[in-house]
Image (cartoon, rainbow, N blue to C red):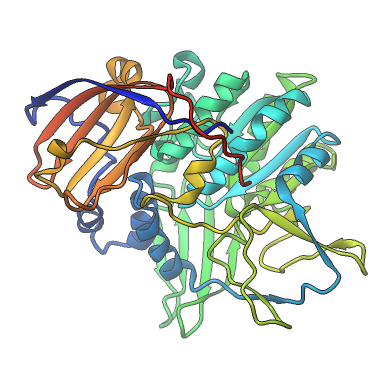
Length: 440
């Protein structure tokens, strides 16, 4: 991708009352999010997802460790192993299939940007349909040509919305395949605590479904079982979409284990409905950047600046870290290194981003939360618009930059006293800068 030093034009700054549009209500300060979610059943997962949506990725990952337990360490020897670029391999293999399933962790925006990096080349191979978990049925994406908050809660996270916008821009037909919003808003109607370790059984009465999670004395998940009502529903909807688009290939961005090709999960249900047609399944969640990978000979931590797999030359197959269910490929994520106070993966977007440093006069009353919206989307959809980027400024001398695409924006500033300011700005690229290649 090309990295450019932009010409940024600050057009207008003005204060607005609290009664005027305050922007997307899903965006807030990290401490406010934690207080609002309280300690009710499911609060850990709620905090994890809500913090991610507001751009507080590091804070979100702390809750992921609490929910899932600390990630298991992968120990291996690099002897007779070849590092293979995951993106190049996926694009090569995808040409052989009609359907590609790739997953994400819902608090990992880097997974959304990795999937985004595949879209253009997959389109050239005949992929024309993009589906994603979390897009509600009866969404307005194809009609509006951009996502809004009511299209799905996960889409409020800026990288997810960027993925959807890019799919539309590339030429994909964007579809939802999950339960209707009404059914998913409160899917589990009841819950039963099974033992002193906190093991739980979750129950849905309509549709009839259940999930059981067993924890050990340390609070670690040791066993999970769920019935497959939702999985069958998803698979059935996907088949309907494929049938209505004959000849088109589809990329389906799913959550966690829904892509597994055996058991109750959607991937297995989909294959059954497609008469066991082979599909390509790629797991990028199980070996995410938080999973330690240790060389047993050198005791070094293995890190790459791109997503990768390990080819075992002696066994002529790829190394399986054994972290998840049956898929074609489990990829090790690129290491995440912050730059300018922002997550490094944002600098390797498939679309070029520009650094926008918020002017010093706007930082005097911080802590502040800045959310940048496409001006046209906000004009049409108001508080339903989804931000392109969000930054949290803890103090006037500790403010990371926004990373924006070329375009016109409405920047909404919220301070800790609850007052708002709207700032109109334009990001241009008339001044050329250095080039940088994607590190996927």
